[in-house]
Length: 296
Image (tube, rainbow, N blue to C red; front, top):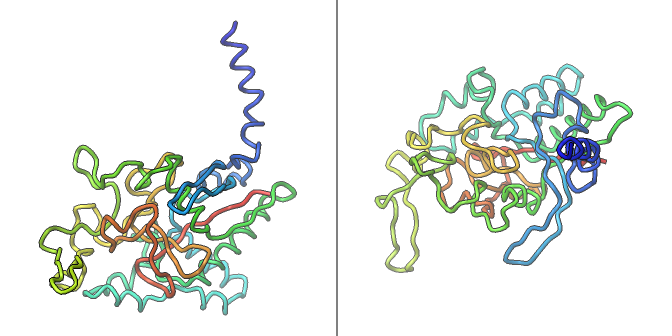
């Protein structure tokens, strides 16, 4: 009897827990979007600069994929917003930055079905923001008279707080300090380097990582992490909030417009930490994005 009463009580209070403002519920979203987002509870982000209160929000469980971004572009075309569509298109010429023969990616990455579940890259901050606005319109239209949503890119402190997964001192999204699990499997898509890549400048005393002879910087043709360049958006293990690829794969644009967080497939292990940021001033094959949803 006591067990029955306890279960009945929990069923009664679960709706209150779900909508108490500390943890926005994915149940607020239209059904077709609920499995695409994770609920991030309110809490405190602790950094070297101090503590910061972070309200609860929803965050997409994966980076925005090619398929999702192409749906956005196709909807712009169908609705006659061709000027916005053209400005938001991925800049395939940016693949030349990789420094090796990359024609298959330049020609097929953003349109071929084989890459549909890979993260969209080479898009501008304006293009990512336009995607957020488009998704906001879709969510609010499908919700009807229900909840109202604001969709945007996360701020740096929101992104890092979500990456920590509820572990205040997490170095990586999975919580531990290592890049491989006990079986030796890579936990993220990053640029492995060995002693042969490390150089110490005798004049300055600084240590640097040298590029490979093919100019790939160690990021291409090294499949120890099961990825040639980018990996599918739901690769590896999610963190405790259910978020995939917060470290490596592609660095993710932030709301500020000049930074991306988490490092990329081209970053060394040190540069894919939760606190890692890199410049994001132009479209890049290393940079994609994921979206944050405020529930009002």
